[in-house]
Length: 382
Ligand SMILES: Cc1cc2nc3c(=O)[nH]c(=O)nc-3n(C[C@H](O)[C@H](O)[C@H](O)COP(=O)(O)OP(=O)(O)OC[C@H]3O[C@@H](n4cnc5c(N)ncnc54)[C@H](O)[C@@H]3O)c2cc1C
Image (cartoon, rainbow, N blue to C red; front, side):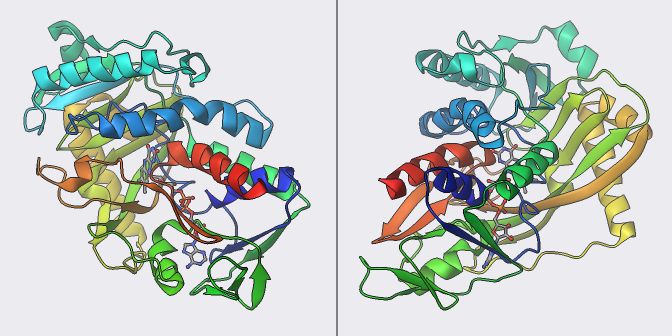
């Protein structure tokens, strides 16, 4: 979010200072995630369709805005449709999931911009897998499957492209390795704001897991009911080509698998990779993982996701390299995914809050970052 916003502002002629506690940009959640560019299919337990309606705008805007930011075509986009696999213990039964996917497809068709998604989805449809198709890809606990036009891309590749784009902007000054603890209004809320002793016409808090603590110093109290989780997944390179579909086990027991190309894969099993979960203002400390702990997590992902999607075991068996990496997930919601009443199933409460010229952005999703950054850059430049 910070990187996208800084580039958009610099290209509008603004001088930007980018603070980051990390020693290099794009090292957090935005480098290490699955890269699902959400159209809303994942949130089948929000039958109001409010989450899908909120996510789809950012999802459809993602590709054109990212290509504008990096000046290059997007790479490593998973070539196949995503398979949504419904677990026997899913909180959304198959019929209800199928009806939901049909409504999301209709929503996508009604929106402009479908042709400019990661693949042309102007005529989005969800197809139920036949028993034979399901049996060919899924294990016994999977009771239904649907093919939807949603796509994911390799976020590691895109992070490298964004780092290059940041470096090319002479109007962006980098203050890396600089933790921001507080902000202060200099002359009332409507005047300039101070960060680390410097005065700025605008301050935008795009700190993701660090955001709430700094908002508190600006006098912006968070709405109740958030959570900070820390999740890791496996980023795999194989020794040889493997033909595999992209698939997600949803909704309840949750894991996913992405085939960005024949040798680059992502695999996660939620309970194996969830390392911290907290409702405090400050996020839990990032865990330090030993080599043994990483191997254990990789084995659990291979075994538990592999039970539902056997091709995953073949991919792990052909590993040339595997990185167990991840980041924070901030959500305006909490609870366990296998609890149908958990507020985590609804993800429509994110976006921008303001106090004069102090702007705080809850990115919501990777897929919504360029869309929100573009809107905030326009507002500031205006
Ligand atoms: C395992 C996993 C899978 C995910 N899958 C998807 C997906 O498929 N699709 C999707 O849309 N989203 C997904 N997400 C969510 C997505 O990764 C995030 O929504 C998105 O990356 C957040 O972007 P951001 O720029 O706000 O945060 P980040 O990329 O984390 O950047 C925040 C930056 O702020 C810095 N920072 C934090 N606090 C401070 C401070 N106090 N002072 C200075 N600097 C600070 C950090 O160092 C970091 O560089 C996933 C997340 C995880 C962890």
